[in-house]
Length: 176
Image (cartoon, rainbow, N blue to C red; front, side, top):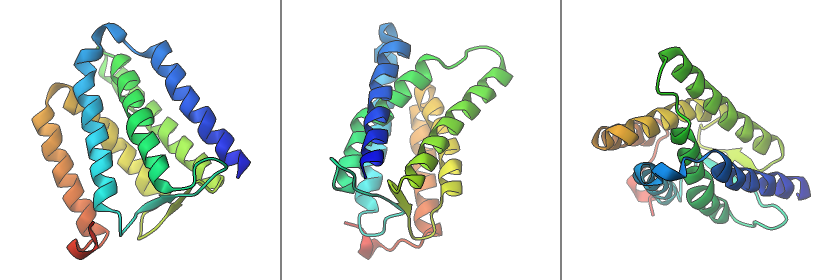
C-alpha cells in the first residue's frame, strides 16, 4: 500500500513539475478550453459509470476511495496532460506528430500498467489494459481535435461514449 501511495504521490508531483517546466504559459488561454473539456468529460464519465464501473482505483496509504483518485485525475493529471501535450505538439512534419502521439500513448499506458501492477487500478465489466491503451489513442486524438475544432471533438466524444455504453452493456437503470 505504501508503494502505491509513493507512486501516486510522485506521479502528481511529476504532473505539477511538468506543467511548470514544459507548459506554454504565454498561450495558456488557447489551451484552457480543451483542459476544461477533458475535465468535464472525465467527471461526466465518472457519473455515468458510477454503478457499472469499467475500472476502479484501489486505496493507498492516503487515498481511500476511487472518488479521490478521479478528482485528482480530473483537476490535476488530465488538465496538466492536456496543457503539456498541446504546448509541445509538433507543428511541422506529420511523421513527428505521429511519433508524438505514440509517445503520449506509451507514457499513459505505462503509467496505467505500473498502477495495475501495484494494485492501484482494477478492471471490471470487460474493460482491460489493452482497451485502455486504445482509449488513450482516442483521448489524445480528441484532445488535438478539440483544440482546433471543438464541435467536432464533442461529436466524436458523444459517439465514442455511445459505443462504449453499448459495447460494455450499460443500462440506464444503472446510471446515477
